[in-house]
Amino acid sequence: MEMMIPQRRHDLGGGFSVGRVLPFAKRRMIGPFVFFDHMGPVDLPAGIDRSVDVRPHPHIGLSTVSYLFSGQIMHRDSLGYAQAVKPHEVNWMTAGSGITHSERFDHARQHGDRVHGIQAWVALPDGQEEIAPSFSHHAGHELPQWDEAGVTGHLIAGSAYGLSAGAKTLSPLFYAHLELAPGAVAEIPGGHQERGLYVATGTVELDGARYGAGTMLVLDAAASRVRAAEQATVMVLGGEPIGERFIYWNFVSSSRERLAQAAADWKAGRMKLPDADDAEFIPLPDNTPFPAPPAMS
Image 1: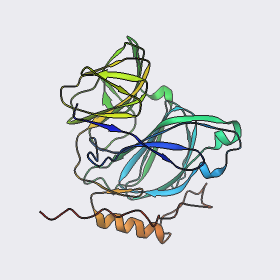
Image 2 (image 1 turned 45 degrees about the horizontal axis):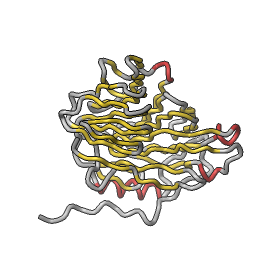
Image 3 (image 1 turned 60 degrees about the vertical axis):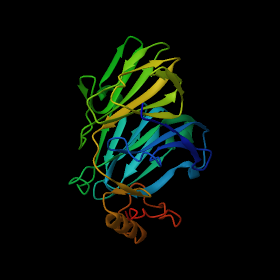
Image 4 (image 1 turned 30 degrees about the vertical axis):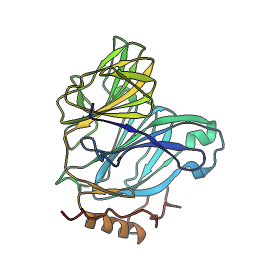
């Protein structure tokens, strides 16, 4: 193992908290994965205030994927898509040159809900950062799945375990959800320069050491298997590096100038809001530091 990254919990308001894993000061990316948040688990009562919702906001230069273990989130975007994401389903949204979307807890507001999942951003490779935005939904039965020797797997994106997922990716990667029974041993996919393993629940053993929930393990080339010391939920991910990427608020790019343009476009109202959710939006925050230029050598 190269490094251990602990999640840093943040309250987003309304009692909804996330554990930020990537980016990390000493490790900004794992392959093309540039952002990784552990959402919840949180119990949202019926009638929950709309302050817990994520109002319309913009993205460029990335693909987003919200993957749920439990609960339901309603996605609406500026391409006209309105799609609920449920456990073991994939909403794969590629922002490219620019998209806006909202994520709301409509189901929880009506019925109450327990929301628990992961949101990840995949940075787009050189030459693809400004492609036309797109959206695809992949229902649970469409995800490649397997169940063997105490390991239940769901392939979210990319290729691994001899399988390929349906979401269109633009650089070599894999992303999978594993449920491990106590004592079960799972293979960690190889064949990629950078790989990580995130323990969402439970405790696992790797290279003779134990790691608990809320821990991202940046793996070395030798890591090939992980064992569950108790019932565990694990995310495995990785891919080929795509080069340096900068993040400013919800924007990702290889160019600081492009980030500045995106921020100016959003502030000036030049990015279309979702047709089905255009009554409000998240303003550009005043306190988000712009990525600094590299230090002079």
